[in-house]
Length: 220
Image (cartoon, rainbow, N blue to C red; front, side, top):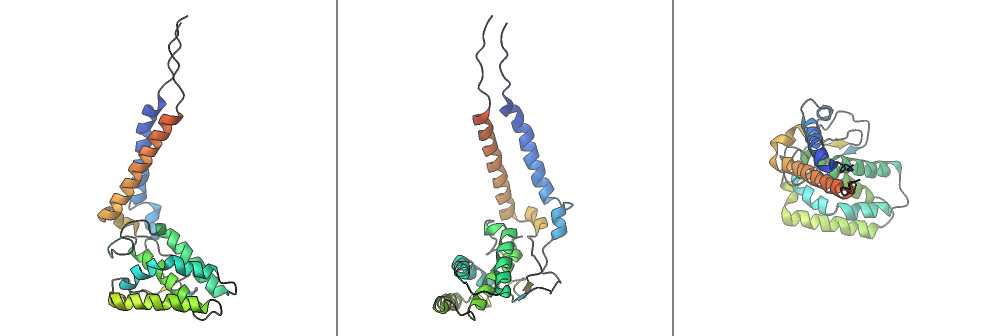
């Protein structure tokens, strides 16, 4: 008798796996999916802390200073509830905007992630402004403010507006990306498709390396 060769399941599994990944992407982008119900909006709930709007020109500059601002905020030891809520909102809103990794989120006004980028960057600026009245690290805060002001003047950032520049924000409202616009925004669409291809390739490689070793044919 001959022992049977174990099935090469990676080749059989890759088809269903690819189909599952594609199906998930289509479901994610489908107008009828649950994600559409959370279409981006400044919201009407004003029960939280109000956050002033941010001009489109300010976004790139504040984005460059986001980490130094939040690092400084983390060093504050004498904080109050308002400050903590602002910082918390900044981090939550940043995660909802996929941590700013989608190309064009900040610079491209037509990006489905631009409005939520406005929200988290407006919150970052609000954190910096709030720190100006806090007793700790005044010199460092003032230096950050001066650097940002100088860049805004050099680049005329305060005068570059867009459709979201007048929107105030509130910690009671989370701004979601405009998922329904992804299929119509080439840069975002290609980013998600690239991610899907990378995930698919990684899954295939994982299956290749973890499949059971084949046994040689033996005769009895």
